[in-house]
Image (cartoon, rainbow, N blue to C red):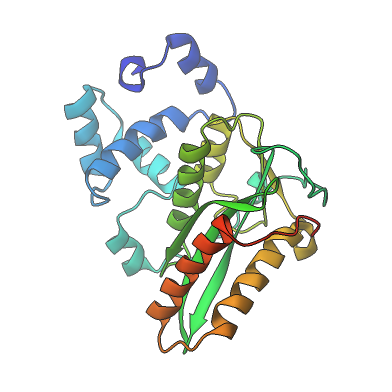
Length: 251
């Protein structure tokens, strides 16, 4: 097990005995799942673990961990039309407390999802901003408002900045941000999770201002004929915002 994860026994047992004892098992399961291009169910995951690592997992345990971390083939998700709920035990206190003026990168990130709607069709934009320079660290646009869009944004941001230990990431209490997978990725990288109070968008006013500005300068300022044009326009604007647009940090 330790060889497969490329960690010492001391590190393995340290985290096995911590709050989330499933985390390193999840990493192995997720690796096999990703290698299958998101097609394997829990039985084939068990076979894959045995073939690749020589590790025998109980299928009930694999199924439980896959359910916990929302690892499921897309066709099954669409068939079931799963409705996800916020995990109340994973809701975190507001560590930022509206102190949005930061003098160093990678101290506080803020993140959220917004709708991109045109002619009753919609896509979703997930963004992470660094409050130091108000630049976009990472973003994803998807036709689905699901956990994947948030996790992909988070992983991209971590890969870009790398040195994120001690950083605070602030969000609302949406189900994606209270998921076990989001929590595990943050904790394994030394990131502290902060959340706005329920129904209090002013607790994340920089992100609210960012979304308002994006829509003002894209949707309301151009002649658009379809959703794909709108998405392309948003992507162009995000590049402009990060590289050329002047920013007001006092928001």
